[in-house]
Amino acid sequence: MRYWRKVTILVLAATVLLLLARQNGWSFTRPRRGETYANGRDRVEVISQPYTLDRLYMSMTGPCGNHPVDCLLPHEKSQLVWLTGLQTEVLDADSRQVISPEFCCHANLTFDPQRMSPERHNAEFDNSTHMDWRFFTLVPGRLHVSLPTGYGIPVLSDTPLDFFSMSLNLNVTDRTVKVRFKTTIDFVRDADATASMKPLFRRALYVVQPLAGSGMEHMKMCASMSHPGEGCIDPLSTNTTGAVISTKDGVQAQFGSDVTFHWMVPPGRHAYRSKVVAGQLNLSEPTTVHYATAHLHPYGESLELYDLTAQRSVLKIDARDYSDKVGVARMGEFQSEAGMLITPAHQYELRAEYNNTTSAPSDAMAILYLYLLERDFHRPAVKNLQAGGDSLLRHMEHFLRTGFAG
Image 1 (cartoon, rainbow, N blue to C red):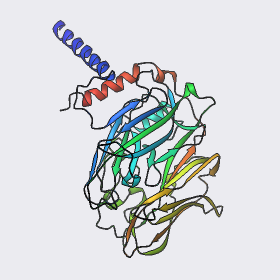
Image 2 (cartoon, rainbow, N blue to C red; image 1 turned 90 degrees about the vertical axis):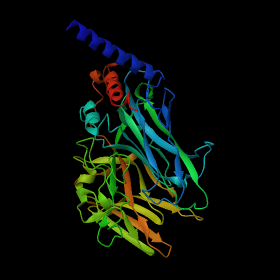
Image 3 (cartoon, rainbow, N blue to C red; image 1 turned 120 degrees about the horizontal axis):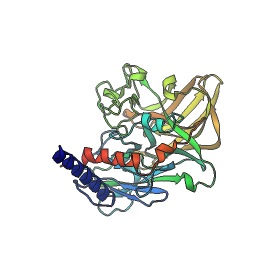
Image 4 (cartoon, rainbow, N blue to C red; image 1 turned 180 degrees about the horizontal axis):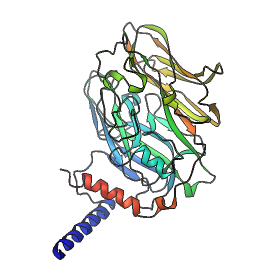
């Protein structure tokens, strides 16, 4: 018994030493193909692995990958921080010079699905937060999201995050393009805030169309995906980390099996309307929206949130395409410190406008991203901010999962 007790103690001690060494920059595994740099104050920079675009890659078909972000403040104790924005630049993979943003399909900052879940995060805040899997989504025309001053998404600094990026090529056929994404995660330490921060949570609303006649009946652009940042849409459920993100042909279960959020737009001008189902907003009380942006494909002109009950427009996001090539050059945004009222007692509708100026059908989506005020926010319990405790367990768990991977 004594022998095995000593062996157990030695193994545990070695594991702790390996963890400490890794936190100080040593590597015992195959190095990641991406890079992470934390300034220790208010931002973390992530540079993705290289993506090779050797042909045209339409929406949801380009090379992609994810990059874990273990800790926002790697050399400090766990503490409350506020995520305030995300921005990405597209780089030439070799020279690292900034190039055209047209090669970005989408990018998502999410919880690390191997080590964290929205349920666990919300529990750390006494279930006073209402986060889903994703914090920020960047899309063509909107590669920079910055919440209004004084607003943020509350997280613990040692919450395991993950950055997923996917590339796109709608234009270049005469050469191979190799790209990386250089992304900055912006945050504010609660201890550094000059005034009390106001908490926000994110919701995504989708225009859906009948699957029959959509042009997507046999397409697999959004086949089932297992990473919460990979698919076109958010996970079906936050109950398990292994939840399917999107199903075959872009159909999501909560909307029914006869609709799709990814469809083909015929030539000409077309309007698409879709009522917002209750499960999308998932609100129990009225609140206010303080930031919004959208995702539209080329030839999309606008996406509006309309209050059917009050018969008024809540907000409208306009888009503009490039004039000399295919792609979205600019996606609008909505910002308001005062906010616009959103209530579960009202019925809302999404209204998307497309103008396909070509002679062939073009694929489309219409997604609205809302950032809403948490009405009854509780700061994390002291036990969740103990130095070293839960953070060490999280690092140990991650190490045991990946530490000796080949």
